[in-house]
Structures are given as C-alpha cells and as structure tokens.
Image 1: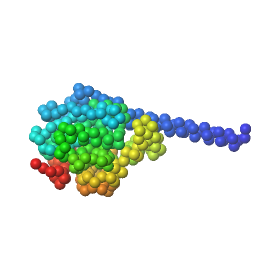
Image 2 (image 1 turned 180 degrees about the vertical axis):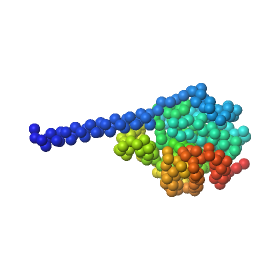
Image 3 (image 1 turned 180 degrees about the horizontal axis):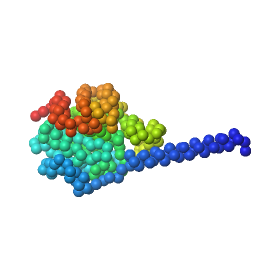
Image 4 (image 1 turned 135 degrees about the vertical axis):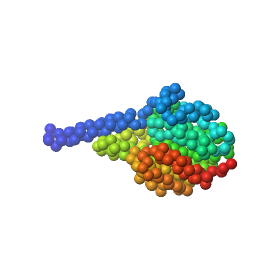
Length: 313
C-alpha cells in the first residue's frame, strides 16, 4: 500500500478518535452540568437549612401551601405558595437559580410578603428541590413551566390578580426567557438579578474559569449532547433573543463584582429588551449578593420600580 494511502487511513482514524473523544467529553459535561436527579422530600430540604437565619421558622409561621402542577412533558413540578396577611391582588413568582430550590428564596419571599405586600409563589424548577425530572432546563424548558405556574396563580387568586416575575441567576434567566412568550395581561413587570445572556455563553465562561482548554469546542460538544438528550441546544436558551420580543417593564440588577455571571452581560440584556427598563448595579457585590449587602436599598429599588406598574390598594 502506498504511503499516501496509509497517511489517509491514519488521518481518518485520528479524526474518528477525535470525534469519539469530543462526544465523550460532551456526555461527561452533560452528566456534570445538565443531568440532575436531586428530588428531595421536605425533611431533607429542611435539614439543609438548619443553619439559616430563621427563614424556615418564618415559613412555618406563614399561611402557606404546597402546590403541584404537571409540565407539558409530564413532569411533576412542586412549589410553595405563601399568602400575604391580607388580600392584596398582587402575587410575585420568585424563582431560584442553578442547583438551588424554593427554600433558598425565603429571604426574598419575606421581603415581598412583609415589606411589599405580595403573595408569593416559590416554584422548584424541574430536576431541582422537590420537583421531578432529571434535566436542567437553563431557563429554556423552565419558561414553559412558568406559564403553567402563572395559570395556577390565576386559578387561586382570580382573573384580576397582578403578577410580577422575579428571579436570580438561572432564575433571572428563566424570567427573562419567559418574557418572550405570550403572557396574560396579568403579568405586569419582571425583575431579574444576575441572569445570563444565554446558556451557551455562560457555560463557555464557566469552562474557561475552570481552566479547561478549548472551552468553545467543549461547549459545542455539550450543546449537541444536550440537544439529543434534553431536547435543546444551549444557544436556544437565550434571554437576549426572548427580550427582543418583550414589551413588559424589566428591572435589571447585577453585582459589579460578579465573575460567575459576568457583570458585562447585564448591559447586553438591558439593551436587548423592547419594553420600559431600569438598571440597578451594586458596587462590591458578587454573584446574587446585592440583596445581602444592602437589603433596604435593594427593597426600595424594587418598590420604586413596581409602584410605576402595579396598581396599589
């Protein structure tokens, strides 16, 4: 056999090996970042938060209920509904981030209930907390689940309820992605804290922060596997594209020292939305730390924003 033929065979074999390695790497990353199976019962959830600042005790003292819905693809999703002390006609859906759960958001729930006078719904996103499923949606699958939660609120509170969507980190991306869907007139405003532009860009950033070589190549491999196994490319999970379709007012919040979801992303998101908008950045705040740094200023910023769009009693 001629040398040229051997070179061709060797090149083909190398290309095949590289392709196999690329697919294997994509599946490894998928198991690390997308495939979750963390459904926990209430006792396991509570055990995680015995160290908190009284939030679980606060929840126990509230008029609250455990809610469940079924997603369009048949997954049971669970959440916590907390009623305000008096009827207000206002409900905030407060959405947690990647790897988190509804109980992570009890501090913010307390702010909405006690300081702002809202009922609150805390959904556990699919595959997280007590919700079922085993694939993280990065906001893209979750946006459709949010439509169902909105309808659940309207079933409980009636057709005149005013609804605000709030989320931080992946929850922020979720509510921004929801903004591009056809929403009922009841949804009046959106607040996002430290959400990312799109899942692909965010994962490339994380891979680079882990000092992994060829982060772009690895992200493409993960995205392909994600499409095959979870039904979506990472680039589809784009808050920017959804905001291009949004007409609702949005308050964008971001810590200026955030290097988990890069601070620069908030400016891209701010420019993308087509509705009224405000930007609140917090010097010195790292990822989703703005509320912890100055909860009073954070609450007053949200109060001032919402007063422009929510009818008060």
